[in-house]
Length: 439
Image (spheres, rainbow, N blue to C red):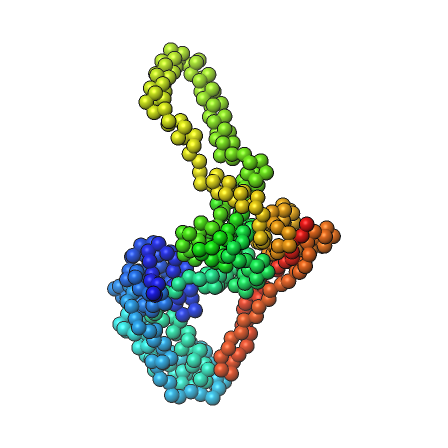
């Protein structure tokens, strides 16, 4: 059965080489694609990978569009037939005078034309130098115009590779320069499987690392993922964008690292501690207020206290279980801490650390939760902290199979007679320190 677009799920909008992650919250939600504002009414219920055509609402100057289901995307190169080309570009001078049409004429052309190919054909016919360009230059010109006037987009189903590529291209620093090849190596090194309990400390990958590990664990399994984070709330954008089922999401327990460690070692009710602190502060404020009222109006204060006591006695008589219900009401993170602590007591099958802090203390604290002869991987965006940790672990001798590796990738443009490395790219994707813990 083909999966369809549903309200409340994340989708990926692809327009040529540009991709954007979007949460489809309501049927008539809008999305900005560059300078264009697109109303997505009509895509609900359509199968994933469907192609839609942009239809202007009033005119193309406003850059507001609705969508219409299309059978396939039409490329400009297929609609425009170019028969004449030059041998070289040595006699072509880019002085801005090659186009006969003025800016006002081009604006009118954009508003009146129904298809992008009509605009480009008119621009080509009014160009003095286009037919003198080489075939490669003409192809480059068409790609540039197609990028500007392209009228189609495709709705993709989010997966780990697409989400990673979208986030990496948008701003690699927000996901600690994690690429999909690095994620695959982390999953391979730590032997993530569907029946194990896995421990993750993540402090800045926007939920991408947790999404990768939970995807490898799968659904309808016995595996668990304890996701530790340093802040009050964990970063979950990539995790939510995967559209995991409720059953699979329940296998990931996201907890604050300090709270769960306190729960693990002390076994105390952290919620009661916070409540006691809040009550103590409130009592001090009430005492101060009561002392001020004594100096101002003693009779009025006594009357208020008498009426308040009467109301409290009446409330306790009529609703005796009210105080007990308030006492038993605890936040969700309290129960998550207890569940994560129980899993940690049973020891973990692997350890993954992707942090922005110095990994030395984090690893020393978390390695005690891992079973003997189980793997670990530490990811860091630069090499120096991992080099220091490598030397420290070598001297201690409580780990085996230490390996420090770097991931370097070079992208290539592959086209006929013009294949070469890309000019601007980020080849590095951090460093990995991997090994096995034994005791």
